[in-house]
Image (cartoon, rainbow, N blue to C red; front, side, top):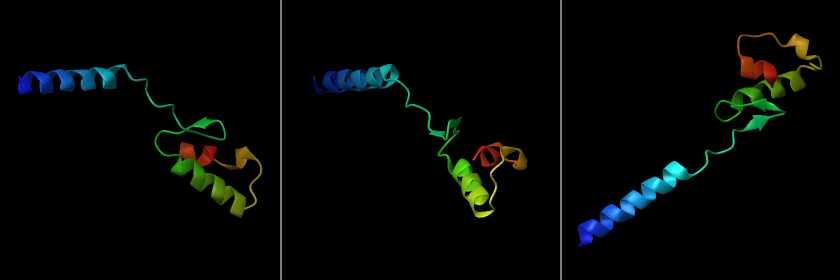
Length: 68
């Protein structure tokens, strides 16, 4: 009896996980982040420290850094 209850509870938990909507993707100033937006934040901080105001001046190898 206990095994059947545990199996049913496990099945319900799994069904709930599968039916739950995915978390909304994080964005940074309108750009989609792939993980935690740290690349965007680093690029934004770098641009602020260096007086960069034109996005065309950001052409490095990292897309997220450039978007920041």
